[in-house]
Amino acid sequence: MTVQLPQTALDAVGGVADGSTVMIGGFGPAGQPVELIEALLEQGAGDLVVVSNNAGNGEDALARLIHRGRVRRIVCSFPRQLDSWHFDEAYRAGRIELELVPQGNLAERIRAAGAGLGGFFTPTGYGTPLAEGKETRVVDGVPMVFESPLRADLALVKAFRADAAGNLVYRKTARNFGPIMATAAHRTVVQVTEVLPIGSIDPETVVTPGIYVDAVVPIDSATVLAGAQPSERGAMS
Image (tube, rainbow, N blue to C red; front, side, top):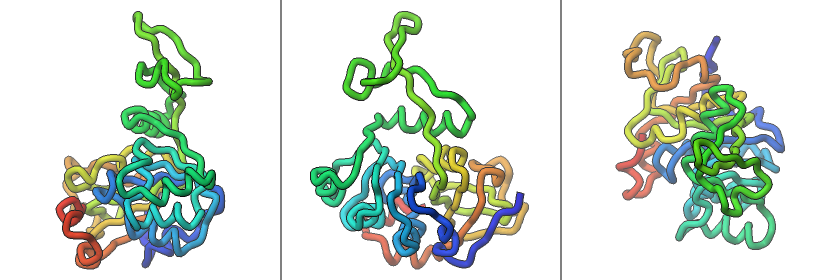
């Protein structure tokens, strides 16, 4: 498998079609592929289904994607926070659909897709509105609800470093959703601070093997840090 090394983030997302399902890694700013989302804003695709842990913060790139009406539906765990006013406004106005998923279920649904599983039973959400319309059964005396896998056309991921074969390492908590999202999408695009020659990364430290990665875009770390708020800089990967 050959990993593409596009010159810019815009080149990397240039083929995204209207109506695509896009997974976006990160817990807020920690591990969020900001430059790739900015490129998606510039690229222009709309009617998107976004799978993300949250629904944007303040005026960040994901929040602006929602504000501009480019997201038809969002699948996430934390849609409403103190600074999620763009999602809140769009949802109240009926301009965006929400599928609320408990965080553990969200992670496991993505992992199930990457592992080729047909879904799983979990007690989380049983007996609540989140289980309405879903299959239920009792397993070892515990009532459970069936959750289906989550797949995507595109995963946008932020890692720390990559080699030219697409093998990835992450930095601390910025690892969060990136590794599982990379396995669950038809195409995975990753932004990193640097791309190293093949063999430069110890195989024992590789988290995401290059077989799951389609394109890697180096983003200058000084540029990334210059654009971050002071509270975000400690969480950068």
